[in-house]
Image 1 (spheres, helix red, strand yellow):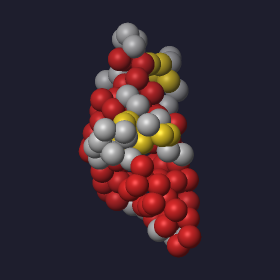
Image 2: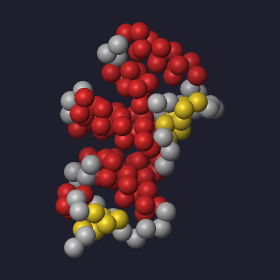
Image 3: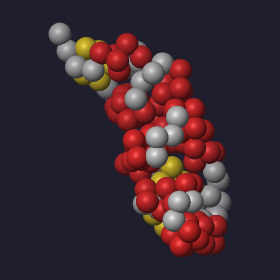
Image 4: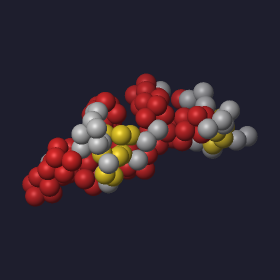
Length: 133
């Protein structure tokens, strides 16, 4: 198994630098298999959403589709896949930021009844958040 950094996934997805896109494709398509997947960590997922949204100005549905494809790809082993799926659902339907959703769902999976926040939007969109009063 090999680990994949955010910039490798971005080059593979965005194809904005021909040389790096070719290198990323060669690596991912040549080395990542269902038997020996490329590892995608939680920080990589969070950075990927941020880069596609902030730097490339991709619309939310496009970013959600990219994350969905990463989660569905058998050639990737995604850290905390179930929490990522839950965060993706809230990102699409409840307006919860993807990173916030991951925080709440990862905390919940580790036994936290609630995650306390000052973020009103996160608290309004997820039953796993409570506002600090």
